[in-house]
Image (cartoon, rainbow, N blue to C red):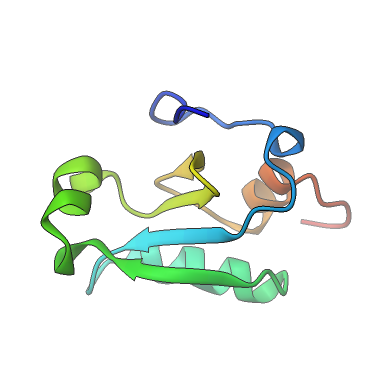
Length: 94
């Protein structure tokens, strides 16, 4: 599956079961916020610092944080609890 356009949200139902990956960079406060939101919702994820990989740096640059499930981009930029609930199809207050 291809990544969606920047800022778009992809329906999680099309990628259920794949692992979550958070692309981030050191010193990025939005990345830290995204990690905290994932932790608050008890969502396991793998954090990858794009600064250590020239290909990822070229691909995602200043778009971080970028949340993927498998190869599908779910969200970029501001990723908070409410947005995670929506893109991950979770219920509850948010």
